[in-house]
Amino acid sequence: MTEILEYCLVVMVSSLFVAGSVATYGSFSEFVSEVQFKAAASTVSALAMEALANGTSQGAVALPPSTISCDGGVLAFSSGSQVAVEDLHTSCSFELSVQSGMHEVAFSANGSGLSAEVE
Image 1 (cartoon, rainbow, N blue to C red):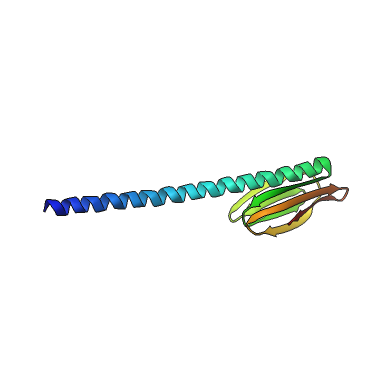
Image 2 (tube, rainbow, N blue to C red; image 1 turned 90 degrees about the horizontal axis):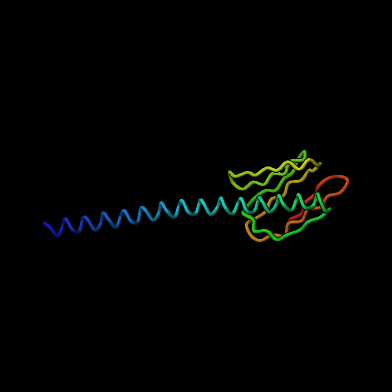
């Protein structure tokens, strides 16, 4: 009887370790995804602001599957349910859909407003 009780305890403790590991991994992967989104959104926003100040900007950015759009002077970077918005106070009208990976993002600003290109 004692051996059966010991076996049950070992199985129960092992199950708790597995459940805890799954929960920890789920939380960690969500955290990493959020950090990657914020980093990409910040970089895209900084490139747009740099273009407004200097006329052009370009940089390599690791992007998740996302959309970079600008309408009415508001730059929006979205991926899944996450959205980051930056008010640029300039005219713009574009929408670019990108796949996950490293991309070259370029912005240019002139008298007609801001434009963007992703390669």
